[in-house]
Length: 238
Image (cartoon, rainbow, N blue to C red; front, side, top):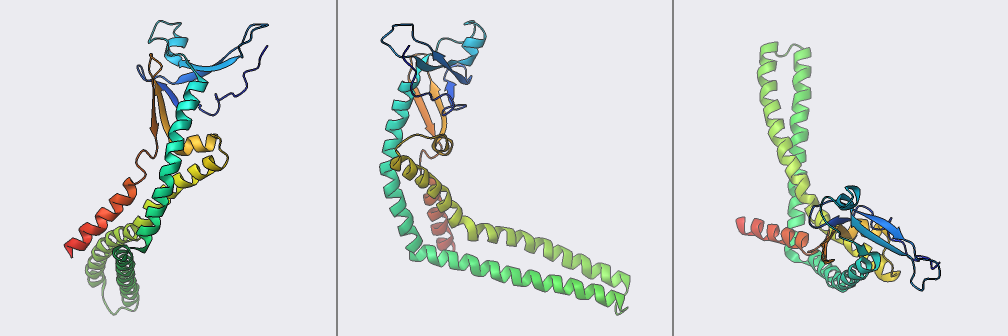
């Protein structure tokens, strides 16, 4: 009895869905008959259709090879795109406006942190003045309330400043994770579970056996362009 060979049930677990009812598609193995020239096969079908004994939804049977061929073709195209995106990242990191923006964001954060330290030092001194009876409790409460309010506003500013200093790194790191996964795939080349987790969101199968593959990085330029758009907007606002 010819063996099934490649078995992608674990590889694609939780990634294939029925395009009509939304149910997950479970993997199964069809064993070839004795003396058959055809090999055993791994397939996927609508879990809703199978579990209800064909009452709900409809047959969405699809051979694993059809899924793998479609996914491989899509990833091969992404490999070529990854080269261009990586070069684009290198260009972004050297752009004068990006360097100026990052430097400004870091300087703003440092200035806010210095103001925070100053307020916290005043709060400590205020407590010491109360202990030393330089001020009374009512004076302490009034000044403490004012300092608390200023510190609260400053902490909000600081949170935004931190986010801004990290914005470039967040955009680049996200895209570099995509590039790394594609380089790994190109080097092997083999679709691993790790690659599927990073690159593939969902695979939908219609009853006509058409596939719609949704990638986690359908537009790998998006995060980078969003960052550059923000840099331009902030530059124009100055």
